[in-house]
Image (cartoon, rainbow, N blue to C red; front, top):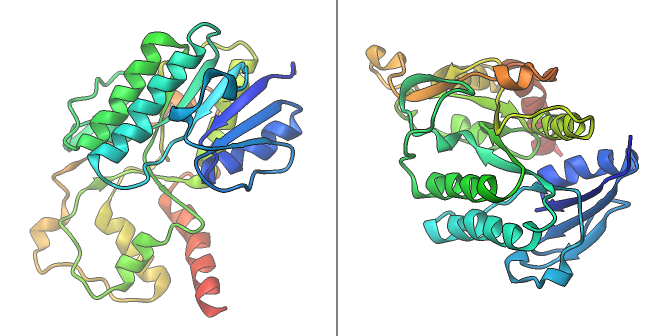
Length: 284
């Protein structure tokens, strides 16, 4: 494989997951993080807000992983994290045209009536401002650079215990809806897989849905977690509410067609080790 110059713009959980494999493959890897000085071994680290960088502060690269998260959960923070970052990447790299893998979200699909979503589905306008800014960032990149939007569904995995803690609480469960899950490790593996497809000259789609094989109702996921944790299920006293009427069901066919295989093909296989890890950490 020919050595590539790669930039990980946003070296958080996912970025630190893909970096070691890229270094091991022999690529020249640089990474940017907003704060902090930790970078995986073999990575040239740059700390700062990339929207404020001069052109000279960015390395010359062949491929970019753009993996941003907002500093806060409000509209202005999402605009800064996604749209403004994408705009700055375009300004810096328009002339050299590196390929960009942008970690996006299936929330760009505003469909919310149990619709089936696949690679041919056009996103309806998202309900939330945060999702609209993610979609805007996709479009900014697609107009200027050879980009692939990697649309991830709900990511769970090590250290992501919010849903487990909600199930353990005494609060009644929210109204049921369709949900889509993907393990953090499979997101990392999918990013590396798609990059390797690009390195081998394969033609890629404009976007891929990165989600496991099992669209499922949220109550079913919570029932599984409650069983694994040995806690009661706080289902509201309304049997008719069990069938979800909102949310969406997302197909991963486009990703699977590239030859990708999931380590955790369903939420059951993924939450089993996660619950064990959670129990271990609480007992220490």
